[in-house]
Structures are given as C-alpha cells and as structure tokens.
Length: 304
Image (tube, rainbow, N blue to C red; front, side, top):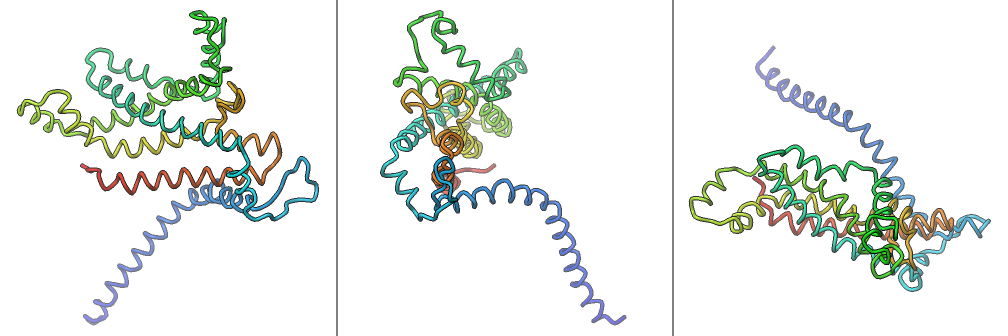
C-alpha cells in the first residue's frame, strides 16, 4: 500500500468513526425525542391549531368551525374571567418567585452552616416538597377551615378561603411553603461549589457577614438563581390541583388562574377551542419571560 493511499484512508477512518459516534448519540436520544414529540410538541401544536376553531362540544354538534383569531379577540376584549385569572397569576408569580428564592437562600445557608443535626434540618425543610400536591391542598384546607381548622381555633371568624381579599394571599403562603425547601436544595448545592478560599480571603480583609454575602455568596449563586427563577415561575403558573380542592377558583374568580381556567373551559364547559387559545397564551407568556430572563441574566452570571 502506497503512502498516498494510507494518507487518504486515515481521514476516511476518522470520518467513519465520527459518523458511528453521531449515530450512537442520536440513537440514545431517540427514545427521549419520541417521548418529547408525542407528549410535548404535538399537544402544543394541536393546541395552536385548535385555538383557531370554534369547538364547543356542549352546544355545537356540527364539529369545529374555523373562526381565525376570534377566540383570542374574545379573550382579550370580552372575557372578564380570563382578565381576572391573568391578574391573579401575575400577582402569584411576582410574590412567590422572589420570596421562595429569598427563603431558599436563607434556609440553605443555615442548613449548610449548622453544626448539630444538619441532616435533620435539611430533611425538615425539604419534607413539604415531597408531599403530593393533593395532600398539600388538603393539609392547608384543614388549616384554613373556620372553627375546626388550625387557624380556626385561634380565631373562628377568620375565613381566608371565602374572603376575596384574603384567598389569594392564602394560596400564596401555601405555594411558598411547598416549594421553598425544593429551592433550598439547589442553593445548598450551589453553596458547596463556592471555593472556600474566597471566604478565607474575605475574613483576612476584614469583611463582615453582610459584605461577604453580597460580594461573594450571592454573585457565585447567580447560575443557580437563574435556574431556580425559571422553576418557581413555572410553578406559579401550574396551580390546578390546589385550586380544584380548595377554592374552585372562587369566590367570584378571585383565586382563579390561567391553567385552572383552561381546565374549566375544556372539561367543565367542553369549549376546547377557547381552552386551546388560553393554553397558547399561557405557553407564550412562560416562553417570553423565560427567554428574557435567560438572555438578560446569563450575560451577568459568572460561571466558576
């Protein structure tokens, strides 16, 4: 075999090897991609398609009728329940996301520094996150029940879930209690990845605890914070089980939220066209907020 033939076969073998590795990689990803396509991409695409149709199965026996953007126009101009749900969801997101992050950081720092019973502290903080959403809703339903609930023994006149001015706050407290421990786990991992030499240098320079947190701990936790912000934001828009058990969106839609309104339109009213339109709006909201957070915050993050 000539030297030229050997030099030609060398790159060919490299190309063949790369193709084998590529095929293996795609083969390993294929089951996940199929699952993602069937249970994520197809439902989203079908929801977008159905949002352009009038399809109220309860009163309409002739099948879907194409109406263009009429569902979206109705949502933003005539549907007062959608407006209330949109506003409630925005309030929940604005309150729960920063509060859960602040509590998660505080709990993580305490659980990371405690000397005695560190495991017990972490388990006790994380335990609410292990409970199913239905169980959490029933626990807090009992807590809020007048006269017989935990808070009812303190003051039987408290009616948190039937008062329009307090029901949203009651749900916000429950959601923060449920997810703060979950947020803590990510921050504990982030704290353990910070180089201890940074804290030693800060002590030598005479920095106090407040300065150390804002100059070292918090900047180094920003990659974790970016991920946690997306998770907590998604949780704020996923409240269905809680509402179904505790309030049904009441009183007077003062606790209704977008995903639960989708459930009401699709299953209670059998209006799949309008439910699809609300779903599309919800997906777009989450996608836009997530992209804005990622592309604006990622540039300010230091990855160690």
